[in-house]
Image 1 (tube, rainbow, N blue to C red):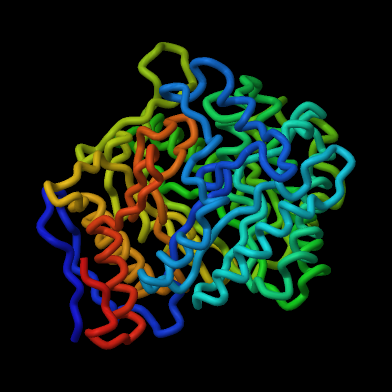
Image 2 (cartoon, helix red, strand yellow; image 1 turned 180 degrees about the vertical axis):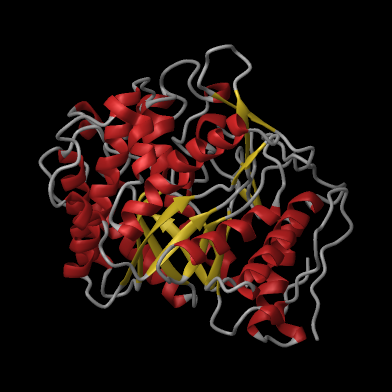
Length: 471
């Protein structure tokens, strides 16, 4: 029996995970997103996105960072694909830059943008890496935001256009498409909290955005099936188990409310064809008459081939201490925390996967993002012994194995992220990569976590010892 053990670390590792715990056809990959890695924001016909606009507003992004260059993946994709090949990765999940492919308000494919994704897919296939394409990972063209953004119903139809063009362009070579990445973030961080682009503070707009994102998912699924009928189609939701900070009726009601808005508000319409009644009651007038039209839920609940699950941590909630407030406070359980303050809770991943398998129709589940940010300091030899990230990775792979043992059809895992990259409102301060990026020189250095993941993937695939990459 082969055991690929993490190296000693200051963070606790819940369990040693063995490659033999995963089937031969398990998908092993990493993930990125277009605005976080591509750069080249003003090249080859790309138009501005909401993130370009957001980054230009002082105080919106930490240290005034932008994605203008990011990892320069647009120019360095050949080297990055070679890196994936050398690491032995089986799959790569990336997203289409909407304003690169369809930059103008009148529609119409940008041939130079299309040529980039053509080249990227061909390079991946030549390297033996399976491409997984996400249509929308948050970089809405600014002209669509100017026309109303996701609170406007028409944006859902525009996503279907992107799906059609992408399916026509890549459907002959790409077998897996994901319509949306984390629509909760797009809707509520972008339109209610304002901490993500486009930076609006309007609860009603956020609720409308959430519905139109889901409607866009349904329309995009239909468009992909028409353009690439042989491809498998799914969507990706960021799911969090929600726990009460203490045992009280009020705290448990906060669990119901947060779980409802964060998890069930998206799971139920996509997989069951209905919005949860208690969340509709909670939202009240924020769901106006006419928002959810006849036929919308049937469109949203298109049959899927798989569900993507993004998981990072757990929500622990309690009622606000302010008298008369119905708001929720988020707290910690005393577990180790990553650099961005998120608790390391691999048991929550098992709980999430098992819950979806238990409460919803059966589907293959792919962990399409899972990772952690740490302060990565190089050793004297220039290596990055990121033992905390390695321990996080190992413990969450063990969580996937436990979920499989409990009946969840967990079919693949994509580590977030291949590269250190532009981490949205945190700029370049938070590093999630298995590969370190020196943003001044664009030099890539595989971290200890990336080398361990490579060895684990190769062992799970049954490669010989000589084929297993060493750090």
